[in-house]
Image (cartoon, rainbow, N blue to C red; front, side, top):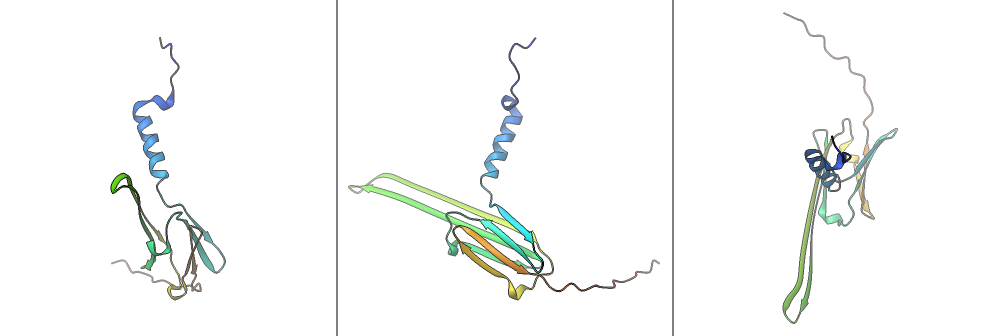
Length: 134
């Protein structure tokens, strides 16, 4: 007979799993991708980052966004450290985005949001190839 109600959040392995999932969810770059008529729009939230800490690459139909930030905070009093803190964070995301006009990709970074415009190529119907079976 169990006199205490079972709390799902106290369930050992499940508790650790939920905590770890929450931990990693808070530490990933949030990205929205919209499919518009003539282009894709990608928005990535990167608060606290500077433009110089972000790199974007498009190669072989793969869009890569990388961001790395390191901050140091020092407070000195009479030549001795009273407090010294450092933090760093790095994000890396990749997406497959096909049929893009590479030369016309546009990127801007304002108020902690990276916005990319990826123009689509004109759709071309291909006949394909019939393969003979031996």
